[in-house]
Image (cartoon, rainbow, N blue to C red; front, side, top):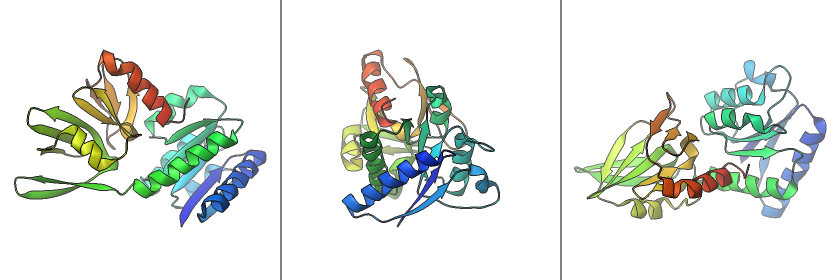
Length: 238
């Protein structure tokens, strides 16, 4: 069962989100365990693990971003959906790997679409690919991949903690991963995992690695507009 947190100091918002979640449960035959809170201060004295967290940015005592950071300490794989009226928070939200960024008032169709995406992602989050190299077999979680770089003979997979060489080309790996909304070409020689992107410009893409940010010159002028569009679509269309 998927455990969902809904946290917003506005009771009309939590009621709206609850109604939408109940509709999603009914229409898709999915069971949720839903925890509704009107303040995020509980994480300071309770270690509660959630699969999906829908949180407001502006709350008393603790902000939605602080709450999200704490939830990720308890479960690094928690899927965070941010609700806010302020687009100024986008940069900060990117730094904690927010799954989607939804504006208020809550649009039913958009919420429905993005929450279904979260459910699908929850099902894929433990997906692995198998790489064989020098008589060794490695199991790599796709969510840990930062980018894949094309080489003359094969490619290199760069994860949060390691690099793996393989005879497989990037497109072969993309076909195996089968997550086209996450893995995007940013350059003819680079495929980037949007799940770990926290910033980018026309020359570099910055990745969240779990310890410190990693900035890599893996984006081309030709691919920039396409990559930008894919990224903003991935984070929810803002």
